[in-house]
Length: 457
Image 1 (cartoon, helix red, strand yellow):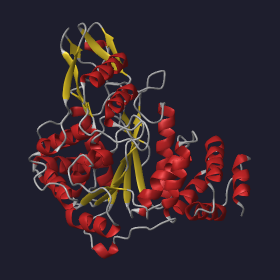
Image 2 (cartoon, helix red, strand yellow; image 1 turned 90 degrees about the horizontal axis):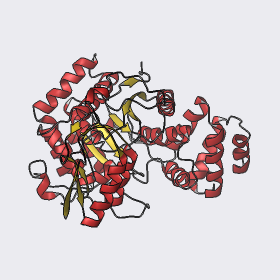
Image 3 (cartoon, helix red, strand yellow; image 1 turned 180 degrees about the horizontal axis):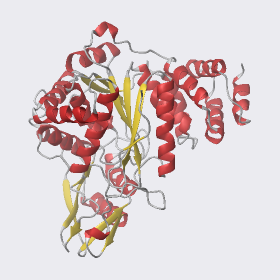
Image 4 (cartoon, helix red, strand yellow; image 1 turned 135 degrees about the vertical axis):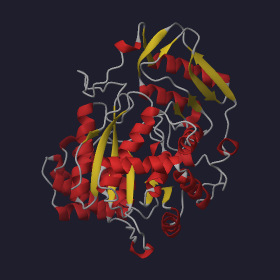
């Protein structure tokens, strides 16, 4: 059918047939469908949505627009799995969980992306490691996964190329938030990677991509339903992003935090809980363990034995990084020119924070991109951020800013101060162990919510 007729159907809130979707996506991949037509389709879909049958068809058509990895020839002795996050601030989970999963017998071909807006990107973090290759061919990718158990790289041009065109248009046409288009974008790449099981980490709170609990839940349910409908065992957890997940943010800074976590030097409680929750969920649905408790214990053994850290080191080396990176991470990573401490102006308890604003403060330091072609400074960021509910005295350090110069540091300080909400009194008046949502739809910031949307049976 003609592209304009396809667009007209969705404009008029009619459902597309599977055949029409396949034909349209084929035209997107070949270039026959113009950017203007992609934009019109994206806006019509944003406004009128898709049913599950359409969303599954779109996901599979986008998967089939390029190569699909097959792992049969690799003779793997375990399941092929992955974890994906909708993005947050201080979210280092992928760096730690992927080698932990490999240590438990899974194989993890993780195709990650760059940072978007206020959220950090796993690919940008790994790019701070000297020599680490995020852009490799499929043969090398599968070789490293088979030999090491995990490889984290960027999307190749051969995998789901239709998604790349559609996403580029969505990014500049205010249609990024379309739930069916988000769903198809994520899952088409995961299906193209040949996965058997996937766990989604869908963030909720002030630093989340989706602004409300209801929208985050809707996105999670869409991904689970479409993933399972497309033949991929998929489950999702909602996790809190009303504050930084790790007490730090910034590319090289988060790599150090990941190494410290893997080696046992420092494992922040909230970060640890989210990592174990996602990992135990995934190891259960892929069939490696019968219960989440058994999976959780195996994940903890992978840390305590040092096996997960060893696998991370092997991955870095196999992808071109230093062979002794884990032992000497800080010697290899770029260091900031300035370290500036932000101190409390009075004694109080941290009652809340605008996590997105803090993420944008890191972007302003040079740790993210204001424009797609911006160069990132991997050395900058923040370290030692307080958690909500913590009490501080006047003059106590709230956070340390790593910057290129003092001017940048002072600008970031102003942004961070305006993003923090303080309350005089005791922390008991702020910390709430209830996992229910607040009246405004936000999540209690002191809680890590583990809401299973659905399980793949």
